Every structure is written in structure tokens, then in C-alpha cells.
Length: 519
Image (cartoon, rainbow, N blue to C red; front, side):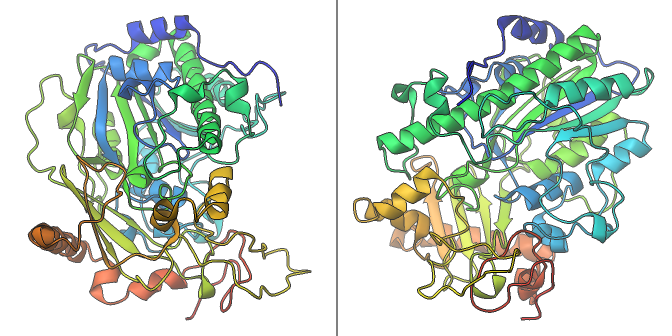
């Protein structure tokens, strides 16, 4: 384990941000935009949300000087479809291969980064952009996010689980390359807190198990708490790099001209979170500040989706919207004195295949509608295992095939982790929690979010909830029909035919990496 794990941003960065991100009159030049997106971080895991475990001074300062969103949702609980939805402003069922994980990103779908560049912005990214998946063979000359700035590396990352990419140094290179007269859009894609974590790194950094608030769907054991400390440390690292970027902007006199947006691509990499449509898979942090946005320290409880960011960025830049955007700009919510937006009655989310976790490489298709009060989920194939199949009794031999990865624990849609292993070993001690994460589910799920934020009690079969279930299901199906979702228009199986470019596993049936499945 590396030394010097205490990585909180120093106080002076906070002071810089407090002075620089306050509301100022809009400049004649379009504003710069710094977009920071963590990898696998759930709401409410930041200090600004009242979670004392998490050391996030940069995020907290953005929130304190701008807007803190309390009901922000991704389009999908998986990296690449969520990121494709952000870039295009579309739902995942409107993106063909890009709507599933680790597949192609069809070139025919326009992205806001290209539109900003055509509108005069200097663009670039460091860390994780769109991915995982294959953009080159789909016709892109570069990642859909833009040019990469990933040359700078750390001599010694603080832990073995943290990326060696020096995000802040790469951002400095980007700023140096930028012409003085151009506004910029920069995508800081931290690879944290994506697994794996260095076991014990959180404790070594001074994190206390006493501050851990274990989500209700996980066992409240010491093993789980220690793993959550490691998760918290990686969130701190992501935040500390953002703090360094803000300091760079301040030193160059650009901070007061820059819109800062901080969020995550999907929820935490734990059972019943990432790759699930329950709250901790799709509900993410979001804070925004910058010139002309708001007077600061304002909580926004409107239901918003990250597909709303594409039209928001285009509006901030004064660039026309391209065709096909489903998201709705947040600009009206970010004004100092916004009018109530009664149109934001719900958000929609969905998932298709995550990893190769079932025979024939099929996914677990589901769609959901989230209102202020309820979460309704429609599972299209309840006969399948939502977390992936258990390990087969007779696993084929895979020697000599580098494209196949052995099936060890099964339930492969759940990231390998100490928590997953613990729950599999101790399933008899925590049968209800094990069932939430790993057992099969019915067609309908309904949760009363206000009283059940961990989605522990499925109300879909309750007699007094049938009217609510029917109303939400009708609304969901109508929206999906209007948006031409193949799952409701008669061609839903097409999602299971799309290639996967990640490692495959020796399940029965189709398992060819990078190939279309004829089913």
C-alpha cells in the first residue's frame, strides 16, 4: 500500500472556488464549460448532501456557489450507454448499439461535443470518455467526446486501485494548447470510484467505520463497512483532482468565466446498485455553478435526467440544438429566479445487456419511470436472472481462447468485489438481502421512494397500490411508444443481437466477442 493517502484538497482551493464560481454577469464570449463525471458514484455520496463520510470539498463548493440537484438520474445504470445518452441527449432505446454496454457507437448519432466544436469551442478530455466499446469501427476518427489529453501520468498513484492518469496535469496541457480567444469544453472523466479498490486503503487514509451509513440493501457488517471506506477514498481522489483543476482555472483568470458541472455516470459498483434500475443504480450527484447561473446555495428538487445536459450545454454556448434530442435543457432551472417547471413530472431510465452474464449473451431488459413519490420498473424477461446466471455446474474448458474469461462466482452483472463475495458466502445469514440482489424478479416492481429509498419493499402486488401501478405502467408504455422503443414496438430482441467488445464467458450458446448474434 502506498504512503500519504490523505488527499483532501487544501482549504485555499475552497477559497479560490468560493470567490470564482459565484454568480457574475454573463460575458460577451460564451462561457467555458468544465464537465467532471465520476465513474460509479451514487447519490447521496458527497458531503454537500449531508453525508459526513465523504470528503468532497470541491463538489461541495460548486454546490455552495451554484445549484445542488437532489433528484438527478442517469439514462442507464451502466457506463457506456449512460455516457452515450449524455452525449446525444437521447434515451438508450433511441441509440441502437450504443444503448447497450460495450458495443458500437453508431456514427449517425450527433453528439454535443462535435456541435460545440463546430460552434467555436476548443474541446478535449482526460481520463474516461465514452466507453467501454468500439467507436473506431463505427466510423469515428476519435472518441465521440473529442481529442484525448492522457499523456501525463503519476509517478506513484496513492493506491493500486487509483488510475495513474494525472488528470489535473493533462487539463493544464489542454489549457496551454487552447487559443486565448476560444472558449473551451473539457470532459474530466475520472476513473474513480470504479472498481477495483485497494483493500484497506480507506482505513489507512483515516476514514472511520463509525461514519459509514450502510445502504439498507447491504449487510451492515465490518467487511461491508471497510469496503465502503475504500469506495469513499476513491471519491475523495476524484474530488481532489477537480479541486486542482479549479485552482488552475483560478490562476489563469478563467474560473469566473467557467461553468462547472459535476456528476457521475451511474451508481456505485455494489449489488443492487450499478446495473440495476433501483435508486442506487441510477440516482446520482449533480452540482452546477458558474457565471449567470444562480445566486448560490440553492437546492433543486426537480426531476432531471443527464440527457438534459446536452441541450443545456448547447444553450449555454449559444449553439443550435441538433435533431433527435429527447432531453430538456436545464437552463430555466439554473436562472437566479426560476419559474416552477411543472413539465418535469417524471424521468425515464432503462437497461439492456451489461456483461456476458447469461447463455447466448442476452441481457436483462427493463425500463423504469421515476416520479417524486414512486419508482415503477417493468422487467421484460422476468424468467432471466437480473444479476446474471449462477455459475454453471459444468463449465467448459477455455484453454487457448483469450477472449473467454472463466466464470468464478457467477451473477456476472455484479462487479467482482469483497461485498459480492461476502454476500455469496453468507447468503443463508442474509436471505432477504441476497434475494434483492441476486434472485429472480417479477414483471412489475413498485417502490414508494420517500419511505423506502433503498427499494426494499416491492408494492406491485399490494391491493391498495394497483391503481398507482397501473397509472405508472400506462405512462411508461406511452412514453416508450412515443419514443419508438423497440422493446414496445415489436423488435426488442434486436438489443440482444448487438456485439459485445468486452471479454466473454463460457456460457452455453453464442459467445463470440465483437460479433453480431443472429439468435
